[in-house]
Image (cartoon, rainbow, N blue to C red):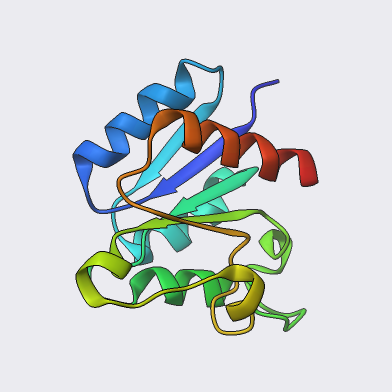
Length: 135
């Protein structure tokens, strides 16, 4: 059975480029274009991995999604998805000058990997495959 990946990003062209790359490698791809829609879709599609942008409907939408998904409260509506791998792909470093590393900033930014945009297809596939192997 194909692994299901949810892409949450407001840039249609980036979403389509990632979709084509992932589908060409037999992944099932679902999409959402806002953080709010992404949170709803997480519960609907039960993804094996989430690819997430930061700046969508506001500059911190992706952070809000990652905090909601990784909420440690066992009563959280996303508790079933707490261990779903999160791959953050964003241009926030370039646009806002902010730098993040999940290894050192994991408490603030609860994601498994952080990759700056634009991401090359080979790098995207390497990160996705590595994260799915961890599950």
